[in-house]
Length: 325
Ligand SMILES: NC(=O)c1ccc[n+]([C@@H]2O[C@H](COP(=O)([O-])OP(=O)(O)OC[C@H]3O[C@@H](n4cnc5c(N)ncnc54)[C@H](OP(=O)(O)O)[C@@H]3O)[C@@H](O)[C@H]2O)c1
Image 1 (cartoon, protein in one colour):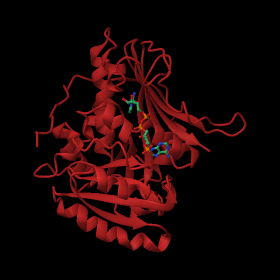
Image 2: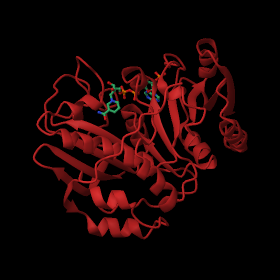
Image 3: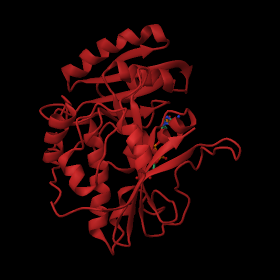
Image 4: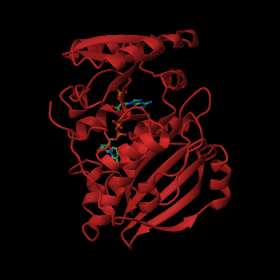
């Protein structure tokens, strides 16, 4: 087990807000019980509060950094963070992109990623690396956990990199994880995973009470146990509505999505509430773009309202969208 990386972001690091959709944000502000914006977020970003979650699922937001030409990774080294890091004219803007990711984790009870991203980014666990954000998440948002629950989605249950750092911090670090799969995925996980698999099966609504047992398994944080949730009864297909109900029952009220494929899937299901899209002013070319295998139709696709736009000099743009279905 290696120690989690820590990084305290410099005080002077901040972006400039150039547009605020006050009308929409005021409406959303009336639907929140959050005490206020975290002080560090107010300093670096501006006001940020999320509406309370509905009864049957968490409030869900995605986060992604894109090149100026809409790509999420370079073809030669396909790791997401390079899109921000390789924007050489503005390293501070790249750090602010990373800060956006971390501050959105600070607001979340759970973060979803998926197997392909884990394989591409072997060092990237989903923890909050800034100690002040951890303190403020507890004080201002009333979160009990130090970090959000790390949730790994794989429909097939194959190709999960069990050597990934995300699976290595159960002891002492308060960093838990859950693998979510479709029917029969758990068998494949059992055959590939070196740990003892404890599976909870959600096949129908009446199974939701099983989430309480899953909660107990997660609380135990036994490093010899791999907690697996099967969501849905159809092979190769995660029932995302049932999954969201289950996560809500587990106490997850705010959920961040760091997997581009899962974000598009949730848009298709009309369950992504917001998308934070940052743009680094470089051109990546190639074909690694979000939604590349998940096209929407010309006569049926989601729209968005911009909630805010911020900049860091002429090289970085940070946007917050509310999805409209
Ligand atoms: N720029 C950024 O901010 C950013 C952020 C994250 C990732 N990235 C980059 O983007 C690339 C990976 O993105 P990605 O979206 O292709 O990978 P991904 O996030 O890992 O999503 C694909 C995986 O999701 C699983 N999955 C779960 N539910 C699914 C569904 N309903 N439909 C389809 N697949 C589903 C698939 O596994 P099964 O086949 O087993 O279901 C597949 O392994 C990497 O290069 C990564 O570095 C960039």
